[in-house]
Length: 147
Image (cartoon, rainbow, N blue to C red; front, side, top):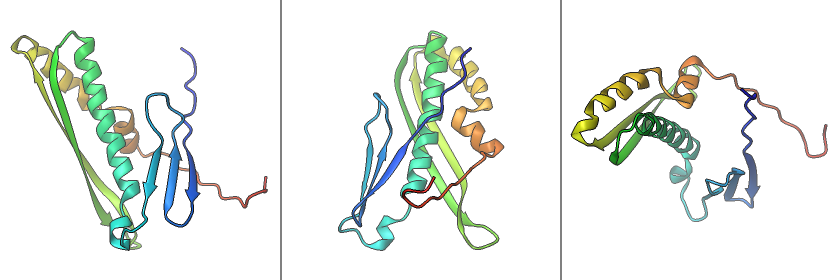
């Protein structure tokens, strides 16, 4: 099995009130975060929303793939992620919990498959189990032109 390639997302600040995330994906559009005209209290939470969206997509897509891979016909699927924040010992905001709820409509003949996939999902998805195990984070800051 070939080694996985790193996923690269590029960020650029565009003026005083806009941010662009270039995903480099054929499946997803780049993400532009535009704060123009928004009061400060409405600007907070963008990164948390992106994290919640990533986990919600990962859980739903993994479950969908597990069902489809076992021959289940998915009539409809919806998912909802809810992220809760709290403060750490230094009073910094932190993500305390993310709950993802997935609702799937499958035919009666696929209920056993649904239950099997629900059991499989106890092992989580890539983003979910990575967060649960603790993800190593490295931050590097350079001035433009520095090596």
